[in-house]
Image 1 (tube, helix red, strand yellow):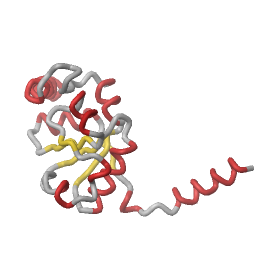
Image 2 (image 1 turned 45 degrees about the vertical axis):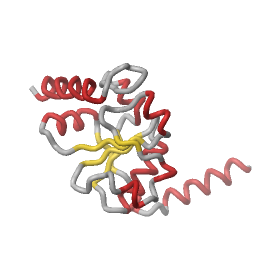
Image 3 (image 1 turned 180 degrees about the horizontal axis):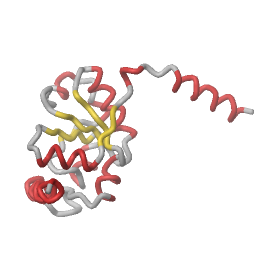
Image 4 (image 1 turned 30 degrees about the vertical axis):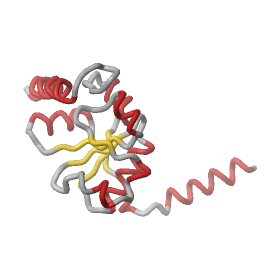
Length: 150
């Protein structure tokens, strides 16, 4: 009975969710098309700094969920870019995306969520684990986007 009450509560919240908090999704293929077209794309990694240092999407800015309400932290995110927020599976990424959307950013989360989805798509990462710099991983990403665009 308790499970039923919780399920009804969650459904009620979902049905009454504010439409402005709904975040659009972007596929890896669409990301690669943006890269190939040299569109201004900014990845926001919403994980903690030690997680970000370990492994991240190339050139991703680190904006942990707990800092997203800081106007100083948001200043590092350009308003004229397509912004993609992520974490490992996108719970934190989605919350950061909602906060950015309220600040009128053009923001997405990935359709195959988070860093796990990125790696599953065999896209390059930077950081201590892959032992690649952002520049090295970014070059690999650019090369792949050129191949995918053909």
